[in-house]
Length: 339
Ligand code: NAD
Ligand code: DAU
Image (tube, rainbow, N blue to C red; front, side, top):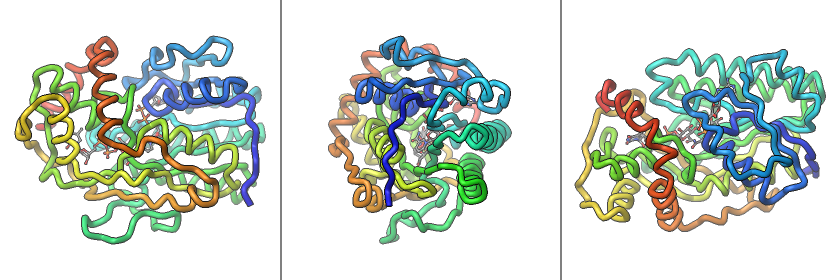
């Protein structure tokens, strides 16, 4: 049976990043009675301006590390729920240097679980479909809650490890925890290292977009606002101890997404470079979100990918001040990797 939970004060980790900041805006807009405390280390991926516009009375910001147990002792007791987004999130970075991924994604999750246990706080864990490895392009199956864990990269294996910690804390200590595994997000505030913003900002800078391998890899795209509404639904209605997969039936090959970006930005279909493939590159992700839809009544709103992509292109056009300062360094890092 699903339970109803009414949070009053949520600790949202990693909310200066892409998906966490979208969630903080979502809560401030849709549930203004709920207070959000943001805990974020402000790594290269965090930007405090992602939270601009959230009224002061509804949010406070703590600059710090989820691995810092003393800091957690100070801020967790005042909260009735933790929604844990903070992570090292980029596969290519994890291949170049896996250590911070183990530290933040595994040790950091362990510290939060210990704090949630100590202060008996409801805990929701944000994870990824990548923990299930990949599917062949012609596989009729999609990932579901019973799919075996088979992560491929240092990033996805660190996320898989953190999921296992959450399950163990729920079963052994009775922690009131839920987990969600979501597919690829797109929308505003996504770092320019990621596929869609990288290509949009490349076009805006006069750089040719870069496609890995044969471009046939498939990702299952979901607008980040739909991810936020799904997380809110699971936090407030989900069954303790359960996992829910989040997806919006948005499977697309990388080359198709790139061709849409090029077409929507007035470029020719072949105006891009093929570059070195990612080592261990997962072929296809695909989510079956039947459980979330039927048991908790969730449905995505942004079902037209092309209009969501158009709005995202417009956001990057209008917010050059936001991405320009990090663009050059990001491309320099890729250039060193031959990508
Ligand atoms: P992001 O890289 O944009 O943001 C991560 C945020 O976490 C940043 O603000 C960063 O400063 C913060 N952070 C990193 N290490 C920290 C630490 N030790 N202590 C405190 N804060 C720290 O990531 P994202 O793309 O928004 O992903 C957020 C979460 O969603 C991650 O857990 C990721 O695994 C998961 N997820 C992402 C996607 C996707 O498509 N991007 C899909 C499914 C799940
Ligand atoms: O599936 C959920 C995951 O989606 C999240 O857990 C990760 O945090 C998030 O980063 C994302 O992982 P991917 O590796 O799928 O996303 P990325 O944006 O890095 O790449 C998407 C696809 O595009 C992938 O097949 C690699 C390809 N790609 C990427 C870049 C940056 C290119 O072809 N060219 C590029 O320049």
